[in-house]
Image (cartoon, rainbow, N blue to C red; front, side, top):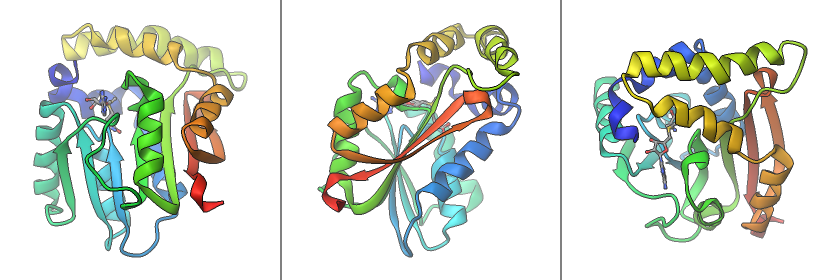
Length: 225
Ligand SMILES: C[S@@+](CC[C@H](N)C(=O)[O-])C[C@H]1O[C@@H](n2cnc3c(N)ncnc32)[C@H](O)[C@@H]1O
């Protein structure tokens, strides 16, 4: 599905979130509290926006971005080359449910707008806990139905009506219907936090952004406590 929309994915993200998606990613990078010379894993990296942001904000970090969509990765690899970060950002094909990395091999692990798409979320969360070093942060950014504040009905209308319509028109694809449905189907924050705990992560923080349209979950592997 993501192969079909890869060419316009970045543009659609910026338009439909009115540019706010990048500020959510910035908050995710900050929440990871990366140490110097960090090795970081960005799952469901897509076109690499979060991986690139990590590398730019941490000039000594090396980032591996992993995603099963070849087309999304191709767009991402072009961006990495254009920005001149080939030496520090490596994008590769991979599935979050079964990672080809050793235990405790990353100082931080993140996934933005991706965990919703993974069929076996428990497996992906357990993999994130497994490959992250004790004391390292696991950051999960995900869209949610806006229910916070007086203006949340307006934001809900945007997510339910405007996003599928605009996304369909601009991408020429019906996949943006799926986006709205998958957001509505994502579990409430407390339920997802419980899923994280069961998978081996201590939940350190849960932050809600923009009337609840986006939630950031921050955890660390159990071993740290
Ligand atoms: C909405 S995009 C998010 C891309 C990027 N993280 C961002 O911040 O824009 C969701 C991504 O999840 C990926 N995805 C789908 N199934 C996956 C899986 N099982 N494991 C890892 N990534 C997956 C898709 O290929 C797609 O690139």
